[in-house]
Image 1 (cartoon, rainbow, N blue to C red):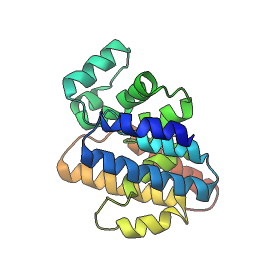
Image 2 (image 1 turned 135 degrees about the vertical axis):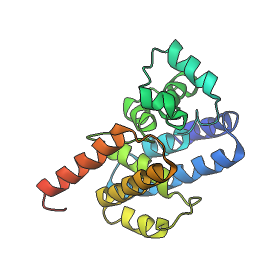
Image 3 (image 1 turned 30 degrees about the vertical axis):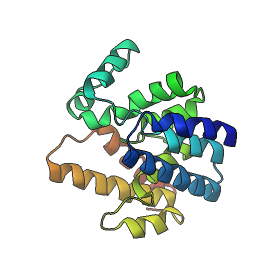
Image 4 (image 1 turned 180 degrees about the vertical axis):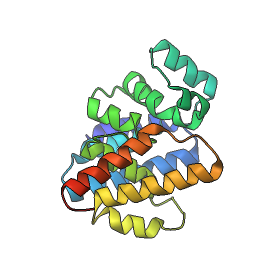
Amino acid sequence: MNGMLEELIPKLRTYIDEKRFIHSLGVMETAAKLAKHYGADIKKAKIAGLLHDCAKCMDNFSLLKIAENFGIILDDIVQCEKALMHGPIGAVIAKRDFGITDNEILRAIEIHTTGDTNMSLLEKIIFLSDFIEPGRAFPGVEELRVKAFQDLDGAIIDAFDLTIRHVLDKGSLLHPKTISARNFILMHRESEGKA
């Protein structure tokens, strides 16, 4: 696996800029720590964390072309909010260009910006690692980093809440998957008496 990472890291450098590369290394390391803490597959977490933004630096035309070529249906909101495109397209790039065939890794890359209902442990780890990696700086991030290792679902709900507020403050479109993912976790916690 380390051999695979040694191959993926220099290749990823050719796909994204330096700032995004440093962010991706931070997400990889954070994902590995969370995976170890919660008993998830550390190797998968590292790969998904490293490659989650592999399509982030592509221009909109290229992203749309790949979506068209691979038959990826981008809903109206994703087409309006181009920043959301790099998740689903990144999953295709990870498979096509980086040789990733593990569906759980690909799915974690696909939904890392919006979340989704019934997220797997790996998907939750990648979503949250992207949010709290060491390079992130926003009010409340330190508390969220601590909470991530105490209450994974609670930290994810907090991350969704911050995302929703940010999107509303910007006056941007909010993806329904984010709301559905948040509601799903909340309902699940209530049924377990954790809400």
